[in-house]
Length: 78
Image (cartoon, rainbow, N blue to C red; front, side):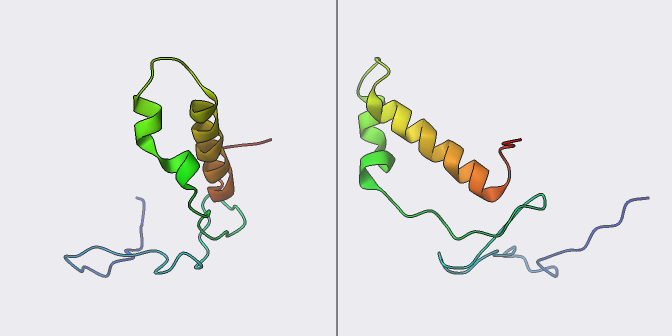
């Protein structure tokens, strides 16, 4: 029988992990890291949806997703 610990202690609003962008979080034994900084050049989704061609903007967005997942320890690098 598995046992689990609740992080929200039964709150109907759920739980919050990291209240500020400077709070560190890690998963799967990864090193805790802060939230990656926002980049409007990468995060502007209108640039991704305006073309059917794969552009440097698409590549930059995919690389940002990859770096974020690596930073969270979700994307295995080894």
